[in-house]
Length: 525
Ligand code: C2O
Ligand code: CU
Image 1 (tube, rainbow, N blue to C red):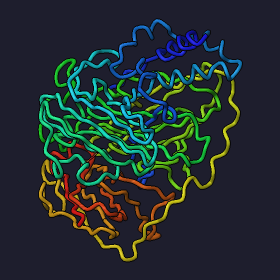
Image 2: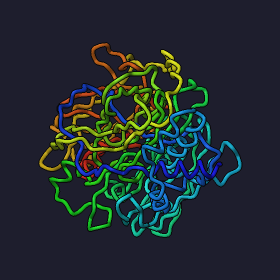
Image 3: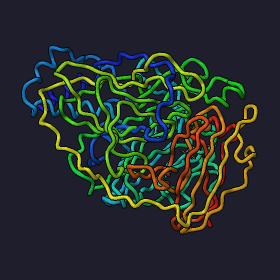
Image 4: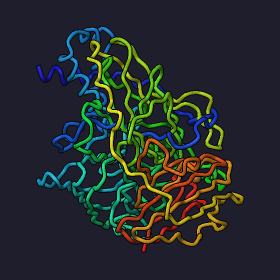
């Protein structure tokens, strides 16, 4: 019986694949004013007992697709499950697991320590329609998913078997400065070299890891992976979880991931890939139950691309972003997720068994034009009978202290473009560092005097976005590390430096813009 269910669930996974995703995100108007848009990715449930074994069947680079195709789920099959809830649960779980990024194997028996090996090397990765030669962590794209609880220590033994130097940055995680994985704090790990990272995951939320050396190219070649940090005391019943890592892929030659050689103007725009990937694969199908709330942790790990997300015929409820849950939920029909932004999203699927609807990236113009048509990311297919109505969300998801402008030091950051380069306060690549003190709160005003959007990222510290009209943080309160600054807009941020002095960075997370000058230093003393 177990086997049968397993088989069924594998079959279900395979189902579709439909959408051919090559186009860009966007055109429409930047309808939102601020940053209530981000994306998140979905992963699967709460931390599992781990070893990654449960998930090796599907996703990136996995070898099981052929068998999967043998088990295509038909409408007739789904009607079998229309009855009892108990029967579809394994099917639903199997579908989530098959879609998920395989987890890293934890080598440490201590339940509060996650110790993993990461080996960067070139491998052939199955993206659905073809094998692609990519840069990988442990042979998979995205790299192994890390799931932990707040307070756990993460130890990573990193070995580099790529032909180029690299290093790993833990995006958004409040690491000690020496663990930040940038050229400011460590030498590149050479081919054959190793480096050990070790730090405590102090905050809940949706994070990710990626190289910080030749970042745009190395990300496009496949080096990125999700980190989910759970808060055991968060409200219960938010829904079954799935992490969705959104990215795209360009080909330097047929079957080889990488940017084709583009000129300075292309970099200054920010190069999108030609194929959109979700958890390393072309669009697939996820089985969901009518009425059963689904929690999608979405991460935009694309080197440059934005995703403006919507689910056909459904509302999205955004409950959090980078640094965990927001103070309260917000409901919307679409959500812009600029590169490096994350979103914690809930959706309650409507309809009956057999119905399908898509998660799509709809057109958005970040200054480079955009496509006319929506890009499919994932098909949601309903199975089973209507679930019991989910319990209402608590009005307050989490208590967050607002930062205050009173006593905050002002910092002005002006972004301009000169030819094909970006300038920070009039300097390309060499703006003087912003200097902060441990314990100080700073009030950054970032003025984007260009016709391009820029997702603005500060290393090491969370910030709150300020509403200049109220002189208080934007509601609902939340902790961000990356926020999109629309073209010709200005954003104000409040950031408080806790006791982790060192040499940090701030930059645009359209990584081609880093190459073209949009990179600044933040020295905390
Ligand atoms: Cu994703 Cu400098 O960071
Ligand atoms: Cu930019």
